[in-house]
Length: 246
Ligand SMILES: Cc1cc2nc3c(=O)[nH]c(=O)nc-3n(C[C@H](O)[C@H](O)[C@H](O)COP(=O)(O)O)c2cc1C
Image (tube, rainbow, N blue to C red; front, side, top):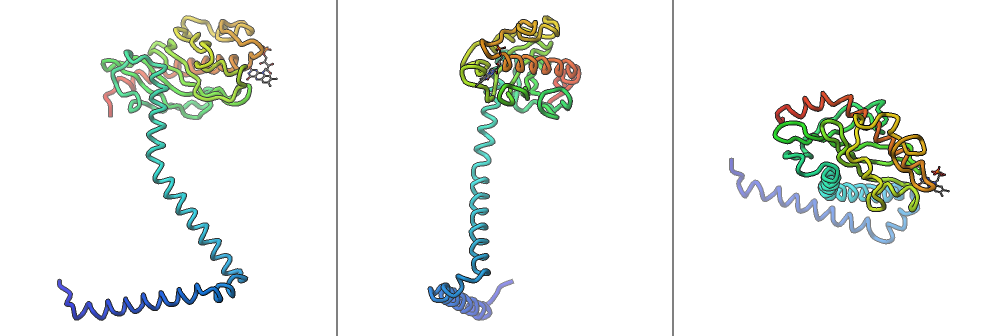
């Protein structure tokens, strides 16, 4: 269907006229005298406030949209680095980030109702797993950890991801401050009985820090809960890992 120029012309003229009228009305409305009259009115103040709120919301929305993918990719990079620190690269040949299952961890003392477990496979078989969990009761607040376990439940590595423990006292749990966290490597529920999963002061085998027993105690207890959690899901994870990738 074609629209003839004769039909289009009056429509465009009317539109142009409307635009001109609108522009004039806006110019009159924005006259300083007119604005001075409006300013004391509640309606005017509410409209200005609403306008600014709308503009701010719009700007925030735009900022959120433009940074969302960058933040997502940084989070993935961070996660990948953490996973690689606790599972040696020669242990797997799959993409860890895209191979995970979420397991109900209610009541497991891991600080979350669900825990995402990353599955490391070598030649199609489960070779190791890795998951993040929380010791909720550190001296100064929750301590977030990541732990890598061989499929038989032996610890491959533990790292502290975040904490608020006191610098110089509780922060020796960080690998950048001391080698303490390396004490866990090679340990499991099979080669260390449950009662030995404690700091030495409580009859266990793990060092506490001078003048700071609470932080290491809570980390050891959390790791022990993590091992018990893995043990109770070992068969399920093994089955999940050996299924072909979706
Ligand atoms: C200011 C301050 C900060 C402390 N920070 C920690 C901490 O981060 N981690 C910790 O285990 N203990 C910390 N402590 C010490 C604990 O209060 C507690 O005395 C200690 O953990 C017990 O360890 P001990 O049996 O080796 O003395 C702090 C104490 C003070 C006064």
